[in-house]
Amino acid sequence: MILNKRDLVSDEEYEAGIEVLDDLNPLAPREVAEYGRIGVERLLDIDLFEPKLRDDVVPDWIGGDGDNEHDHGHSPHEHAHDHAHSDIVSVSIVEERPLHWEPFVAFLQGLVDSYGDDLFRVKAIVQIDAVELPVIIQGVQAVFSPPSHTDVWPGGKRQTRLVVIGRRLSKEDILAAFETSLDRPAATFDPRWGAV
Image (cartoon, rainbow, N blue to C red; front, side, top):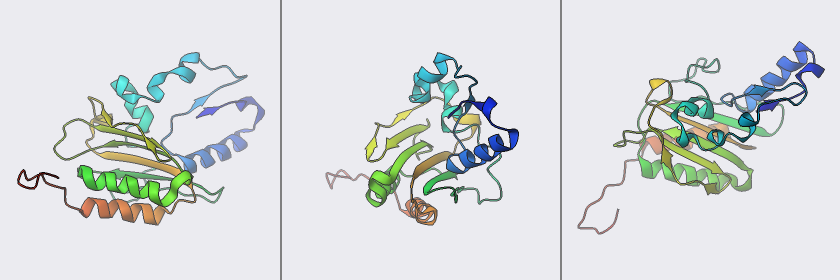
């Protein structure tokens, strides 16, 4: 997020704006610009959109090292925000347990099916069972980029970190669906069946 014209608001107005942004997406990197001055590399840096290209940008892309100020009092596997400022909701989830790929993909498809055009953004670094490297997931509405990976875990922590942003999202439904995906067994391949 680029915050421009900082010089035109008081400290109290600025802090109120930061609270709104924290509610929308507590994990988003921020840049403050004055008089529209910001380095072109911060605007056009492809690493903001393709974190797989450089491992050092992954923590900023997903939101720091996982020890941010918003992790307060939630169970170890979930963290969510919603707010009264508008109908835009951000749900952030942190999960320590490895995920099974098929149930996780079904969870993502459920988001698309449930929210359609109201699903603005999904991004995640995912710990998939039997996969050593972090898997990167990115989606806008129903369009998801092919999964990719990075060579390092942000902050050295093997955990899934997921952010879902959209209009009129149900935090409770998303958390329940994610929890259900954790409880579903992974599909297994038996060559006698000829399919997974």
